[in-house]
Image 1 (cartoon, rainbow, N blue to C red):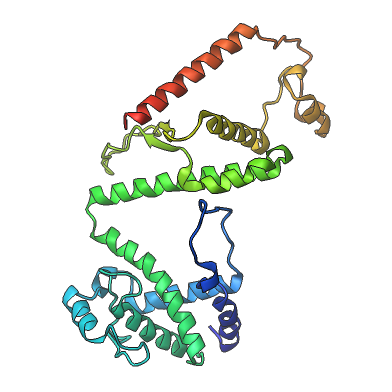
Image 2: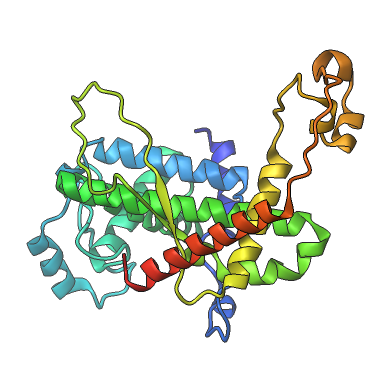
Length: 324
């Protein structure tokens, strides 16, 4: 990385690392969640540089670069109360060791971050002034969280790794569900009233789900095709059914809004008239037929479907109450 590019990266990083004291305080209401914040290109460039320099110092086998508990405790006992700038180096760039047993800002890791930042500046031909060192240190502290996860995954048993992957998948589906619903509520004027409600619910309070394969250990050497898992929605016990219906309405709008494919060659009355009018070359692309179909279904059929859905919803709520 050249001197010019590195100097362009540094100033913008300072504004995206740590919150100010004014932004931290007690919250009277639930946390307001929103869409993911996109970092600037300069901020992403700096994150990439930090990750690359970590690999340069530690390689890919993270287990070889963990400080022992005795080393960490001994350093903590003698130097934890000392000012950062007076604190001795807990390690050297040529023998880089991270404390994976404690938090990212333990006394050992603070010293490691300073060692990393100085070596990073030297490698990228940056001036080692206080502001720059603190910027790089804060970025390294953030990256330690990822390193700790990688270290824990390496140390975990196969069953432990499977469980961790399941937790990540659960959380990923919750986040996808939350952002999809928030986008729908923001896009439709009649649903703007509920945007704040969705934000206060957040991803963590979206409906959960459980796969019918979560407790099955699959042999990687098994060459047989395994079917995709089926998921059962687990409704929160505390949530009113009216909110559930509102969220399901948003899900229905998502499917309608995002659908770009269509089935050609159906009777003309099977297509949405407004959608069909907006299509170009309808007779060649959609190819609607002149068949006549009556899609008016007897009202008793809809009543039966509604009753069945409500029955299934009640059963799910009862299962959730029993913890199943």
